[in-house]
Amino acid sequence: MITSKMKRRIKRKLNVEKPTVWVGKEGATPQIQNEISSQLEKKKMVKVKMLKTALKDEDAKNVASKIAQQTESTLIDVRGHTFILYKSRKRKGEKSL
Image (cartoon, rainbow, N blue to C red):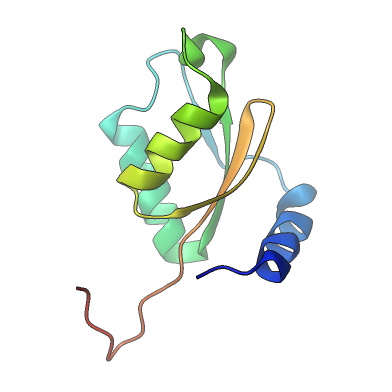
């Protein structure tokens, strides 16, 4: 579970960073989701920017929440077309349910 204090710390850390993943006009393709998942495994936090054409008729928050659900991560913040995802790393002795 992520507390509000952790959310603030993550937002502050990624505020000055540039997005590391860009969602293009095709939308959230499996390749984009794989890239986000691999970056989450390495860094725990990812900043993603979507093009306006990627949204089509959807809201940015809806697209971000779908991506978060598919990558099994937590949606921290959505601002305009940019959003932040966080995924805690599994410890060596920890098993998934």
